[in-house]
Amino acid sequence: MVTRPVRPATQIQTIVGLDPKVAAALRSHLAEVADSAVLTIVDEVPSYAGAWSGRMGEVIRNAVQLALGGFLTLATRQDADAPKAPAIEGAYQLGRGEARSGRTVDALLAAYRIGARASWRDMSGVAVEAGVDSGQLAKFAELVFAYIDELSAASVAGHTDELESSGRVRQRNLERLARALLTGAPADATNAAAERADWEPPGALTALVLPESQVSHAVTALDPGTLQPSDDVPGLPEGHASLLVPGTGSATARRTLLRALRGTDAVVGPAVPWLEAAASYRRALRCAALGLDGLVDSDEHLASLVLAADTSARDDLRARVLAPLADLRPSTAEKLTDTLRSWLLNHGRRDAVAEELFVHAQTVRYRVGQLREIYGDRLEDPAFVLDATLALA
Image (cartoon, rainbow, N blue to C red; front, side):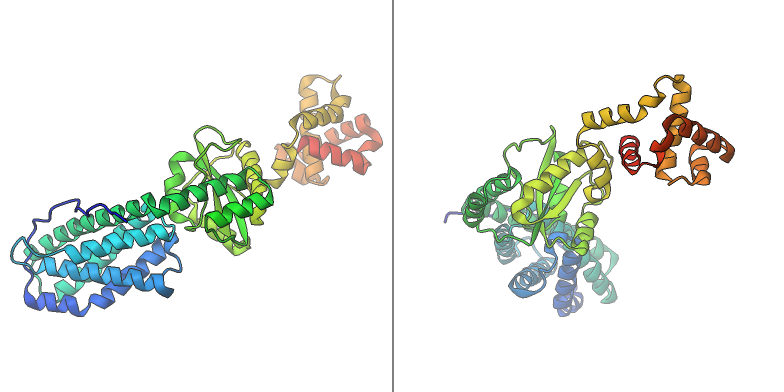
């Protein structure tokens, strides 16, 4: 396979010329600094959760150590010709591996930012303890960020090359699978799409509906197996996108998902068996139509969704329930309607009704007396109470 040459984003000109004693101290802590950087990445970038264990963890750890070793070579140079090729090639291959793992460029760049911060914190501490002078420390900091710029550019190039070759086909298959799931395609067709995409079905899927401008941020924080259709999906409001997030469907998994989505305006559908993802998507769309602000968990708005399922039927039910008040003055009818609603929802507790309506308990007694005169025995009829509660809730 042909790959593009890896070219650095910047040409590093900073010469630090670290004292050999300082360089030796830094090298003695190299493995420790690398482990700390990787653990910080795993902790702060959700896409890397669990990546520390197994083969991928070792690959990432080796790449970080190689990068740090290359950095120390640069930091101890006395001229502008110190070699960077091994570290640059390592970063390029890391980018290809991350593409094969399904992680996005955004997640990769977030890992670089966080890893650079953690490495600088630890290495600068060691350097200060070893007696580095202030002039060298300033150049040291400048070199860190120039070096990370080169490595991240190499990783992005590797990620792009991988997606443009073998990864591109799989990505397109994943997008087609997402569309099949969201549109409720037959189970045999969806299973075939999952096989073509080399995608292992999870225990459950949760559909999200969110603004397109927030997709990049959300994907960085979500499971790397998250699916996103590239084609238009029926029902999506303009300027919005949908994602399918894999998970177990447990209460713990849902809390983790909602935590990852903080700061977004995502509407989160229910967790459902993966072949029923269209049901989660439809629920998320209906919840989005309620016009709620911020992050919305559809599981917390089930009653509102039921009441909004057929608005014309609810309007008819409300008109029928309130028909006995139609001949009253509008202001009187409005007060009695508010009282009836509160009386139903507070199960007839007069003090609770008075507190909700900001009136005296005697006023509540008087109004309820009026309602009993108008409605008679219907206020004790369970069927009427159910109709009135649904109509006025």
